[in-house]
Length: 376
Image (cartoon, rainbow, N blue to C red; front, top):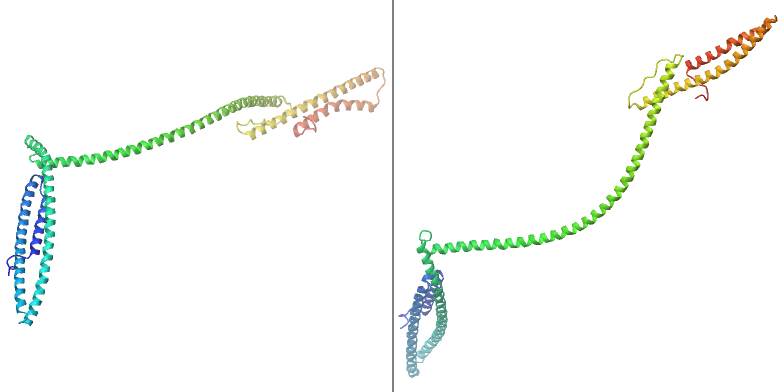
């Protein structure tokens, strides 16, 4: 009978919760300048909703109590009529059970609403605490608002509104964060470079020590090489002097051979053919062949002279003997003693054969180019 007058409590609670959620979500979306006003408005709305729910709950409880009284009255009437209407009593008993079940349900629903009310009161308390914090924060930020208003009033062209200053501040904060991050990165890089530099210096010092030891060892080797080089220079100078002396000696020998060859070729009374052609410098084989031919001619000339000298001595001895024979013949002739024919033939033959034999021998040796064994 009274249930048709008020909406169901579940729908009312859901609507209230939806309103509260909208209120809470609206709080987070407003700016700081209007947050306190909205909080106060929402608090009034929540208070009104809570008062409405309390009144509704009280009316429902009054209706439940009236229903309970009516139920008890009807139960008394039913007990009076139980003896008359047993079937009716059973039906009423079933109705009573249904009513009791419904009463239990209403009691559970009431308990649930009481818990919701407690939660809403806790939420309201929390929201009031948040509102107080927001108010305190707003009081703290009031000086900044005043400062921003002064900034906008002094620089209206650059910052026509407070939001422009705030946006500029956010931009600067982002830039500051970026620069701070870059500074931290640079510091880390500098630290890494410093560590690498220390390691490099340590490595270079170690390498310098190793290189110094190597330089000392190399210097010692250089000194040893210099000493060895000095010894080699002395030995080279000695060899150069020896080679120079040998070159001078060989040059003198070559010049002597050439001079002897020219003198022998020019002073020879025998036809020796064409003179040897002196080769050009650098043709060692031709030079050796030229010197060998010249030495052979000089050797032949020396041998011929020696042979002529020995033959001349024999010729003089024979001539003396011939002169002695002629003197003896003359003495014999003067003494009118004629010589035998064979002695005169011998004397004539020896006189002619001595000079002819020497001349024939020299001519055969010069034309044939041969030398007697052992003649040098």
